[in-house]
Amino acid sequence: MPWPQTYAPLGSLLSTLLAALPVVVLLGGLAVFRWPAHLAALAGLAAALVVAIGPFGMPAPMACASAGYGAAYGLLPIGWIVVNVIFLYQLTSERGLFDVLRHSITTVTEDRRLQLLVVAFCFGAFFEGASGFGTPVAVTGAILIGLGFSPLAASGLSLIANTAPVAFGALGTPIIALQSVTGLDLFQLSGMVGRQLPVFSVLVPFWLVCAFAGWRGMLEVWPAILVAGLGFAVPQFLVSNYHGPWLVDVIAAVVSLALVALFLRVWHPARIWTSAGGVGGDVGPGPSGTDVVPKGPDPTLISTAHVWRAWTPWIILSVVVFAWGLPSVKTWLDSLSVIRIPVPYLHQAVLRVPPVVPAANPEAAIYAINWLSATGSGIFVAALLAGVAMGSSFGEMARVYWRTLRLVRLSLVTISAMMAVGFTTRYAGLDATLGLAFAQTGFLYPFFGTMLGWLGVALTGSDTSSNVLFGSLQKITAEQLGLNPVLMAAANSSGGVMGKMIDAQSIVVASTATRWYGHEGEILRYVFFHSLVLACLVGLLVMLQAYVPPFTSLVH
Image (cartoon, rainbow, N blue to C red; front, side, top):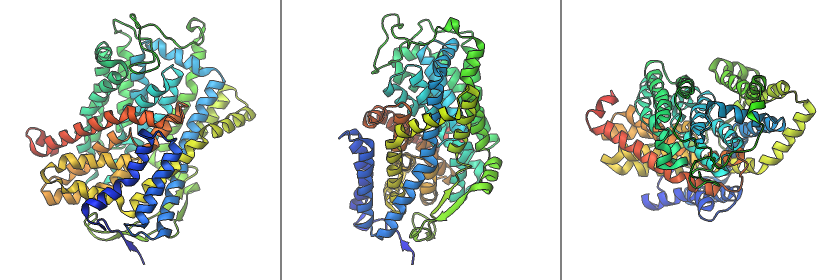
């Protein structure tokens, strides 16, 4: 017989505090006690299981099954992406091509602030649009390390950059998922998010460069930042409102990257910043801003052929990942390979009940082993093709892959444990308890509903998952308060993108890509303020859209 979730077993306040305990343990272990990430994740999982089985009354077999389901999901698809991106990076480093790639980027601009803009914001947005699920942070973190950025800067700045594009990531998957659980019109949802996030698509590049170079350093390159931001925001608005959610990020990223590259051919900052340390980094700019340059091949000795060879692996990766993410290709690959396994003791054994959903609804729990259509598989194929193009033998690639597995083994344990926490809180109803607490804020609900999306992504590591968890609750609460349900459902996704930089899964992906595993607490402390303030700004925008003309006109 299905087990119905209960959202206030010990009264509203105490139940809410207990529901938050796994997150407090996990993030507190990382940021306050500075535990290794895998230990903090396992402690958070233990807390989630104790709270779920104890006060919330979830049967122990169901709780263990939900944790196992989450752990498996952490390996495939999330961990599978991380392994293969690092494999590709290791291959290019082994062949000495990463140094050539780094110096080829300096031919576009030698300024570290502008390299950060191109790599983390423009290039990262393309990978978010094409695949999502941690790919952009893994790729841009690895490239920034290759460019000489400190591990903290490479990790934290990659996370900050991977925000504004997230709602339309993986070819619009979060918006499509939001529509599926709310029943609202897909194009209305896409358009609404497209009238919220472009503001932050302009703001985030300025924020990103300021976090790295400080206020003065940012002002020195503001024209290029504005070109990048508007180059992304305008297509993001147009495509989301007049086409749909599918190609928003891909088109906007390509336009932004092209405009920045063209602009930098005719404009250069008065002072070239060649330090990769940045504010609070390993090294700071000297009086001329030209103190530290990573060693590598003499740029005058690098031929055009060498540059093309260095970029070939990343071009192959971009093409393959984009093709792999196309719905028609993904459907075809699924038809050849996907294996769906109903999770024992869990599939349709948990009932979501009102007021979280309109009517009691059994929760599905089917683990899809999509070993061929998974984004990580596309990255693996791209890495093999790139290895062949670089002249690597299969024996050499096998040795590099084994080294990669040894390198990321603790990261895989951490990601699996963190996803186990998220799945346990979801199936036990702890997430809904937190959501219902936010729903009690009345007039201020547009702000706190947005923050609920932020919390959902911080808990689950995915804007898609947050939309699935809270989309229906947002719609129901908005209707009860006389608010536009499309506005609040969209706010869940728009607010959620700012939680992407503090979700534990993304932080581990960043620390692994930058080879800085064990410093996750430092990364969390670096990005937490940025995440919270940006989420609050999204919440204020939604408040304006809900109540204050002329912003209310953007709702319709």
